[in-house]
Image (tube, rainbow, N blue to C red; front, side):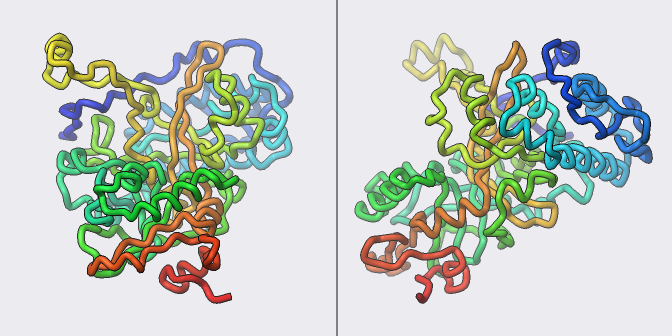
Length: 439
């Protein structure tokens, strides 16, 4: 029996899929949307070609979406073997990816109507972890690619935990995720460790924290990422497998691929070991797409400046805000004791800093944030990621923290990009073990 972590006070339950009837609402563009992409059979057999049959075409994406939504319901998949599910997933990825790279797909990304943009986003394959379970796309506990990053540093040293720890222990420990690209270097979001960096009692020299904050917020890149490098003998840092890092990969390079966000986030929607996988296809976050998301949430576009380079469809219930459970078991008693009773949170929040991977396990991005957008009475939950190239540029531009040596020699602490020192490149960091590259 799969245990779910309902004991956790600030996590949540999945919501149901969108009402299928709403998918037939009028007003969507009929400009040959996905024309030529083909038809999808509601009761498609595992061996059937999903979309390439000549003569079965749905130029109207609304029809395509309704058919596809029914087909993607997991109860239609649960009787299939892992190989059969792999074939179905690959066909879905092939068709959506082809449309994303087509002239019509690119037109919508850069100048499409709001209706077209919303339809495109909601038509991204709605894969769940159950769809890929036990297939070649699944990720085993033994090869889990991320670590849980702790809420506190000890003497300037970040703390990490692997899956050898109980999920309840991880829950009380973590603030997000990170992943290793070298034996002595891991990446995470800046916001995962920002509190520890700024809190003097946690051992990070104040001048180092100030330089990092200046680099993070003064940069025109506005990228929420940091590389943390440490001596091999450093205690408190547990390591996950070293991941290949495609430092040149952009959002455009992966827009027709199936990618996987893999994080440790023990809650009621995680697996019993506390892990989550979001299989997805990304949509480049063009200025046009970003403007649309801002309008849907009544936000200024500037508030979305550091979300990343791409967005992807999240599993239902992961990015919506949920109210915490009563800490005492009673909201009335919580109120009487002066405890916080109205705190809300997105359930995907603990996956910040998780790697976004290709099928071969190569890192092509880092998970950044999530948001729920509402358009014409329908809600869609989105995740956001930063591309590998942007990560590389941020590290080269100064987002690198070198942990003190075990002897506590503060003169070993540097921040790349200081005016009196040459800037580092990601190539130099990886090649030279984190030291400054020779010029």
